[in-house]
Image (cartoon, rainbow over all chains, first blue to last red):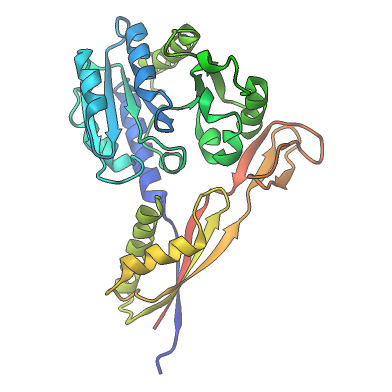
Length: 227
Length: 116
Protein backbone atom coordinates (compact mmCIF):
# COMPACT_ATOMS: atom_id res chain seq x y z
CA UNK A 1 0.00 0.00 0.00
CA UNK A 2 1.57 3.24 -1.10
CA UNK A 3 2.01 5.96 1.44
CA UNK A 4 0.24 9.26 1.00
CA UNK A 5 2.59 12.24 0.73
CA UNK A 6 1.83 15.91 0.99
CA UNK A 7 3.25 18.28 -1.61
CA UNK A 8 3.13 21.96 -0.76
CA UNK A 9 2.06 24.12 -3.65
CA UNK A 10 1.05 27.55 -2.36
CA UNK A 11 0.11 28.96 -5.76
CA UNK A 12 -2.56 31.50 -6.50
CA UNK A 13 -4.64 30.37 -9.46
CA UNK A 14 -5.33 33.81 -10.72
CA UNK A 15 -1.72 34.91 -10.33
CA UNK A 16 -0.70 34.14 -13.94
CA UNK A 17 -3.54 36.27 -15.22
CA UNK A 18 -2.79 38.97 -12.67
CA UNK A 19 0.89 39.08 -13.63
CA UNK A 20 0.13 39.32 -17.35
CA UNK A 21 -2.50 42.00 -16.66
CA UNK A 22 0.07 44.05 -14.73
CA UNK A 23 2.48 43.72 -17.63
CA UNK A 24 -0.14 44.87 -20.16
CA UNK A 25 -1.01 47.86 -17.96
CA UNK A 26 2.64 48.95 -17.67
CA UNK A 27 3.28 48.42 -21.35
CA UNK A 28 0.25 50.49 -22.36
CA UNK A 29 1.19 53.27 -19.98
CA UNK A 30 4.66 53.31 -21.51
CA UNK A 31 3.00 53.80 -24.90
CA UNK A 32 0.63 56.43 -23.40
CA UNK A 33 -2.45 54.41 -24.27
CA UNK A 34 -5.44 54.30 -21.93
CA UNK A 35 -7.47 51.07 -21.66
CA UNK A 36 -10.96 50.90 -20.17
CA UNK A 37 -12.60 47.62 -19.19
CA UNK A 38 -16.35 48.08 -19.57
CA UNK A 39 -18.52 45.51 -17.83
CA UNK A 40 -22.30 45.07 -17.46
CA UNK A 41 -25.17 42.60 -17.70
CA UNK A 42 -26.50 41.69 -21.15
CA UNK A 43 -28.68 44.59 -22.27
CA UNK A 44 -27.23 47.01 -19.71
CA UNK A 45 -26.16 49.36 -22.49
CA UNK A 46 -22.46 48.67 -23.08
CA UNK A 47 -22.56 49.19 -26.82
CA UNK A 48 -24.83 52.24 -26.48
CA UNK A 49 -22.52 53.82 -23.94
CA UNK A 50 -19.53 53.14 -26.17
CA UNK A 51 -21.26 54.78 -29.14
CA UNK A 52 -22.24 57.81 -27.02
CA UNK A 53 -18.71 58.05 -25.64
CA UNK A 54 -17.11 57.84 -29.08
CA UNK A 55 -19.41 60.61 -30.26
CA UNK A 56 -18.15 62.89 -27.46
CA UNK A 57 -14.47 61.95 -27.48
CA UNK A 58 -13.48 60.94 -31.00
CA UNK A 59 -12.54 64.48 -32.02
CA UNK A 60 -10.26 64.80 -29.05
CA UNK A 61 -8.68 61.37 -28.80
CA UNK A 62 -7.70 58.63 -31.23
CA UNK A 63 -9.86 55.72 -30.10
CA UNK A 64 -10.38 52.02 -30.75
CA UNK A 65 -12.70 49.36 -29.38
CA UNK A 66 -12.11 45.72 -28.46
CA UNK A 67 -15.38 43.79 -28.49
CA UNK A 68 -15.73 40.66 -26.42
CA UNK A 69 -18.54 38.41 -27.44
CA UNK A 70 -19.33 34.80 -26.84
CA UNK A 71 -20.14 33.96 -30.43
CA UNK A 72 -21.18 36.81 -32.68
CA UNK A 73 -19.89 40.06 -34.06
CA UNK A 74 -22.92 42.32 -34.26
CA UNK A 75 -21.41 44.76 -31.73
CA UNK A 76 -18.11 45.07 -33.60
CA UNK A 77 -20.01 45.73 -36.80
CA UNK A 78 -21.80 48.66 -35.13
CA UNK A 79 -18.46 50.17 -34.11
CA UNK A 80 -16.83 49.68 -37.51
CA UNK A 81 -19.80 51.48 -39.07
CA UNK A 82 -18.70 54.47 -36.96
CA UNK A 83 -15.32 54.28 -38.71
CA UNK A 84 -13.49 53.44 -35.50
CA UNK A 85 -10.95 50.58 -35.42
CA UNK A 86 -12.52 47.57 -33.72
CA UNK A 87 -11.19 44.13 -32.86
CA UNK A 88 -13.57 41.30 -32.13
CA UNK A 89 -12.69 38.63 -29.59
CA UNK A 90 -14.96 35.63 -29.77
CA UNK A 91 -14.57 33.61 -26.60
CA UNK A 92 -16.41 30.57 -27.95
CA UNK A 93 -18.45 30.03 -24.81
CA UNK A 94 -16.18 31.57 -22.21
CA UNK A 95 -18.01 33.94 -19.91
CA UNK A 96 -15.28 36.56 -19.49
CA UNK A 97 -12.23 38.08 -21.15
CA UNK A 98 -8.83 37.51 -19.60
CA UNK A 99 -5.41 39.08 -19.97
CA UNK A 100 -4.20 36.59 -22.61
CA UNK A 101 -7.12 37.41 -24.90
CA UNK A 102 -6.48 41.14 -24.51
CA UNK A 103 -2.78 40.71 -25.22
CA UNK A 104 -3.68 38.98 -28.47
CA UNK A 105 -6.28 41.60 -29.43
CA UNK A 106 -3.88 44.48 -28.77
CA UNK A 107 -1.52 43.06 -31.40
CA UNK A 108 -4.20 43.76 -34.00
CA UNK A 109 -4.19 47.48 -33.20
CA UNK A 110 -1.63 50.15 -34.04
CA UNK A 111 -0.67 51.48 -30.60
CA UNK A 112 1.28 54.41 -32.02
CA UNK A 113 -1.93 55.69 -33.60
CA UNK A 114 -4.10 55.48 -30.47
CA UNK A 115 -4.81 57.34 -27.23
CA UNK A 116 -7.56 55.20 -25.77
CA UNK A 117 -9.09 51.75 -26.15
CA UNK A 118 -12.45 50.69 -24.78
CA UNK A 119 -12.92 46.98 -24.10
CA UNK A 120 -16.50 45.74 -24.10
CA UNK A 121 -16.37 42.72 -21.83
CA UNK A 122 -18.76 39.76 -21.94
CA UNK A 123 -22.21 40.60 -20.57
CA UNK A 124 -22.41 39.35 -17.01
CA UNK A 125 -21.73 40.72 -13.55
CA UNK A 126 -19.94 37.67 -12.13
CA UNK A 127 -16.98 36.30 -14.08
CA UNK A 128 -15.47 39.46 -15.63
CA UNK A 129 -14.98 40.85 -12.11
CA UNK A 130 -12.51 38.07 -11.29
CA UNK A 131 -10.18 38.60 -14.23
CA UNK A 132 -7.97 41.66 -14.51
CA UNK A 133 -7.37 42.41 -18.21
CA UNK A 134 -4.70 45.05 -17.72
CA UNK A 135 -7.05 48.01 -17.89
CA UNK A 136 -6.11 51.48 -16.73
CA UNK A 137 -9.67 51.91 -15.43
CA UNK A 138 -12.53 49.48 -14.88
CA UNK A 139 -16.06 50.71 -15.31
CA UNK A 140 -19.38 48.94 -14.93
CA UNK A 141 -22.88 49.80 -16.04
CA UNK A 142 -25.93 49.06 -13.95
CA UNK A 143 -29.17 49.85 -15.74
CA UNK A 144 -32.22 51.07 -13.83
CA UNK A 145 -34.49 48.11 -14.78
CA UNK A 146 -31.99 45.72 -13.16
CA UNK A 147 -32.78 47.15 -9.72
CA UNK A 148 -30.93 48.96 -6.94
CA UNK A 149 -30.20 45.76 -4.99
CA UNK A 150 -27.49 44.51 -7.35
CA UNK A 151 -24.54 45.56 -5.15
CA UNK A 152 -25.82 43.03 -2.62
CA UNK A 153 -25.90 40.26 -5.20
CA UNK A 154 -22.69 41.00 -7.09
CA UNK A 155 -20.46 42.65 -4.49
CA UNK A 156 -17.18 41.81 -6.20
CA UNK A 157 -18.08 43.59 -9.44
CA UNK A 158 -19.00 46.76 -7.55
CA UNK A 159 -15.83 46.61 -5.49
CA UNK A 160 -13.34 46.22 -8.37
CA UNK A 161 -14.60 49.15 -10.50
CA UNK A 162 -13.34 52.75 -10.58
CA UNK A 163 -16.55 54.03 -12.12
CA UNK A 164 -20.23 53.06 -12.10
CA UNK A 165 -22.51 54.29 -14.88
CA UNK A 166 -26.18 54.00 -13.88
CA UNK A 167 -27.81 53.80 -17.30
CA UNK A 168 -31.43 54.15 -18.46
CA UNK A 169 -32.32 56.94 -16.02
CA UNK A 170 -35.19 57.67 -18.43
CA UNK A 171 -36.84 54.61 -16.85
CA UNK A 172 -36.59 56.03 -13.32
CA UNK A 173 -40.01 57.61 -13.40
CA UNK A 174 -42.62 55.16 -12.24
CA UNK A 175 -40.03 52.63 -11.04
CA UNK A 176 -39.14 51.81 -7.44
CA UNK A 177 -35.43 52.15 -8.15
CA UNK A 178 -33.91 54.12 -5.26
CA UNK A 179 -30.85 56.01 -6.55
CA UNK A 180 -29.78 57.19 -3.09
CA UNK A 181 -30.01 53.67 -1.63
CA UNK A 182 -27.96 52.38 -4.56
CA UNK A 183 -25.25 55.02 -4.07
CA UNK A 184 -25.05 54.26 -0.38
CA UNK A 185 -24.71 50.50 -0.97
CA UNK A 186 -22.07 50.97 -3.64
CA UNK A 187 -20.02 53.48 -1.66
CA UNK A 188 -19.96 51.16 1.31
CA UNK A 189 -18.41 48.43 -0.82
CA UNK A 190 -16.14 50.82 -2.65
CA UNK A 191 -15.68 54.31 -1.18
CA UNK A 192 -13.50 55.52 -4.07
CA UNK A 193 -15.89 54.70 -6.92
CA UNK A 194 -17.33 57.50 -9.13
CA UNK A 195 -21.03 57.23 -9.95
CA UNK A 196 -22.59 58.66 -13.13
CA UNK A 197 -26.37 58.46 -13.66
CA UNK A 198 -26.95 58.65 -17.43
CA UNK A 199 -29.43 57.87 -20.14
CA UNK A 200 -27.78 56.72 -23.36
CA UNK A 201 -31.14 57.21 -25.05
CA UNK A 202 -31.74 60.86 -24.12
CA UNK A 203 -28.08 61.77 -23.62
CA UNK A 204 -28.74 62.96 -20.07
CA UNK A 205 -25.64 62.80 -17.85
CA UNK A 206 -23.34 61.69 -20.69
CA UNK A 207 -21.36 64.96 -20.58
CA UNK A 208 -20.32 64.42 -16.94
CA UNK A 209 -19.29 60.88 -17.74
CA UNK A 210 -17.34 61.93 -20.84
CA UNK A 211 -15.62 64.66 -18.87
CA UNK A 212 -14.40 62.22 -16.23
CA UNK A 213 -13.23 59.75 -18.86
CA UNK A 214 -11.40 62.49 -20.80
CA UNK A 215 -9.55 63.51 -17.65
CA UNK A 216 -8.53 59.88 -17.04
CA UNK A 217 -7.32 59.49 -20.64
CA UNK A 218 -5.36 62.77 -20.33
CA UNK A 219 -3.61 61.45 -17.23
CA UNK A 220 -2.15 58.59 -19.25
CA UNK A 221 -1.47 60.75 -22.28
CA UNK A 222 0.55 63.14 -20.17
CA UNK A 223 2.06 60.48 -17.95
CA UNK A 224 5.73 61.07 -17.39
CA UNK A 225 7.93 58.21 -16.38
CA UNK A 226 10.06 58.92 -13.36
CA UNK A 227 13.22 58.05 -15.25
CA UNK B 1 -20.00 29.70 -15.05
CA UNK B 2 -16.29 30.48 -14.86
CA UNK B 3 -15.84 27.39 -12.68
CA UNK B 4 -14.68 25.66 -15.82
CA UNK B 5 -11.76 27.98 -16.55
CA UNK B 6 -10.85 28.29 -12.89
CA UNK B 7 -10.89 24.52 -12.39
CA UNK B 8 -8.82 24.09 -15.52
CA UNK B 9 -6.17 26.40 -14.04
CA UNK B 10 -6.26 24.43 -10.80
CA UNK B 11 -5.89 21.14 -12.63
CA UNK B 12 -2.96 22.47 -14.68
CA UNK B 13 -1.11 23.53 -11.55
CA UNK B 14 -1.85 20.20 -9.87
CA UNK B 15 -0.67 18.20 -12.89
CA UNK B 16 2.48 20.30 -13.19
CA UNK B 17 3.45 19.49 -9.59
CA UNK B 18 2.42 15.87 -9.99
CA UNK B 19 4.77 15.54 -12.97
CA UNK B 20 7.64 17.22 -11.14
CA UNK B 21 7.29 14.76 -8.26
CA UNK B 22 6.54 11.79 -10.51
CA UNK B 23 3.47 10.86 -8.54
CA UNK B 24 1.19 7.96 -9.47
CA UNK B 25 -2.02 9.43 -8.24
CA UNK B 26 -3.33 12.64 -6.70
CA UNK B 27 -5.69 11.80 -3.85
CA UNK B 28 -6.69 15.24 -2.63
CA UNK B 29 -6.25 18.92 -3.45
CA UNK B 30 -6.48 21.52 -0.67
CA UNK B 31 -7.72 24.96 -1.70
CA UNK B 32 -8.32 28.26 0.02
CA UNK B 33 -11.17 30.10 -1.65
CA UNK B 34 -12.47 33.54 -0.69
CA UNK B 35 -16.16 33.95 0.16
CA UNK B 36 -16.40 36.75 -2.36
CA UNK B 37 -15.74 34.47 -5.31
CA UNK B 38 -19.01 33.08 -6.61
CA UNK B 39 -17.93 29.47 -6.67
CA UNK B 40 -19.95 26.65 -5.16
CA UNK B 41 -18.04 23.70 -3.69
CA UNK B 42 -20.20 21.05 -5.31
CA UNK B 43 -19.76 22.51 -8.78
CA UNK B 44 -16.05 22.99 -8.35
CA UNK B 45 -15.76 19.28 -7.58
CA UNK B 46 -17.97 18.29 -10.51
CA UNK B 47 -16.00 20.38 -12.98
CA UNK B 48 -12.75 19.10 -11.54
CA UNK B 49 -13.93 15.49 -11.95
CA UNK B 50 -14.94 16.19 -15.52
CA UNK B 51 -11.64 17.84 -16.45
CA UNK B 52 -9.33 15.47 -14.56
CA UNK B 53 -10.79 12.33 -16.09
CA UNK B 54 -8.00 10.03 -17.36
CA UNK B 55 -5.27 12.08 -15.63
CA UNK B 56 -3.32 11.20 -12.46
CA UNK B 57 -5.64 13.56 -10.62
CA UNK B 58 -8.81 11.65 -11.56
CA UNK B 59 -10.91 10.99 -8.48
CA UNK B 60 -9.05 13.49 -6.29
CA UNK B 61 -11.12 15.08 -3.56
CA UNK B 62 -11.16 18.86 -3.29
CA UNK B 63 -10.75 20.05 0.29
CA UNK B 64 -12.03 23.58 0.22
CA UNK B 65 -11.34 26.00 3.02
CA UNK B 66 -13.35 29.21 2.82
CA UNK B 67 -11.72 32.52 3.56
CA UNK B 68 -14.19 34.99 5.07
CA UNK B 69 -14.71 38.45 3.65
CA UNK B 70 -12.85 40.86 5.90
CA UNK B 71 -12.91 44.62 5.61
CA UNK B 72 -10.40 47.00 7.10
CA UNK B 73 -11.56 50.40 8.33
CA UNK B 74 -9.74 53.26 6.61
CA UNK B 75 -9.90 55.55 9.60
CA UNK B 76 -8.94 53.34 12.55
CA UNK B 77 -7.49 50.24 10.87
CA UNK B 78 -9.80 47.76 12.60
CA UNK B 79 -10.39 44.56 10.64
CA UNK B 80 -13.88 43.09 10.74
CA UNK B 81 -15.65 40.21 8.98
CA UNK B 82 -18.68 40.96 6.84
CA UNK B 83 -21.37 38.63 5.53
CA UNK B 84 -21.33 40.19 2.11
CA UNK B 85 -24.66 38.91 0.84
CA UNK B 86 -26.77 39.93 3.80
CA UNK B 87 -25.14 42.98 5.16
CA UNK B 88 -26.68 46.36 4.62
CA UNK B 89 -24.26 48.13 6.84
CA UNK B 90 -20.48 47.85 6.61
CA UNK B 91 -19.76 50.49 9.24
CA UNK B 92 -16.70 49.82 11.39
CA UNK B 93 -17.72 48.18 14.66
CA UNK B 94 -14.93 50.02 16.50
CA UNK B 95 -15.23 53.64 15.38
CA UNK B 96 -18.42 53.68 13.28
CA UNK B 97 -16.47 54.87 10.22
CA UNK B 98 -18.06 53.80 6.93
CA UNK B 99 -15.04 53.80 4.68
CA UNK B 100 -13.50 50.37 4.58
CA UNK B 101 -11.47 48.43 2.04
CA UNK B 102 -11.57 44.74 1.20
CA UNK B 103 -8.82 42.94 3.08
CA UNK B 104 -9.54 39.29 2.26
CA UNK B 105 -12.21 37.26 0.52
CA UNK B 106 -10.96 37.12 -3.08
CA UNK B 107 -8.41 34.33 -2.59
CA UNK B 108 -7.95 31.48 -5.00
CA UNK B 109 -5.10 29.55 -3.60
CA UNK B 110 -3.87 25.95 -3.90
CA UNK B 111 -2.32 25.00 -0.58
CA UNK B 112 -1.10 21.48 -1.20
CA UNK B 113 -1.89 18.15 -2.81
CA UNK B 114 -1.95 14.70 -1.27
CA UNK B 115 -0.34 12.17 -3.56
CA UNK B 116 0.61 8.52 -3.80
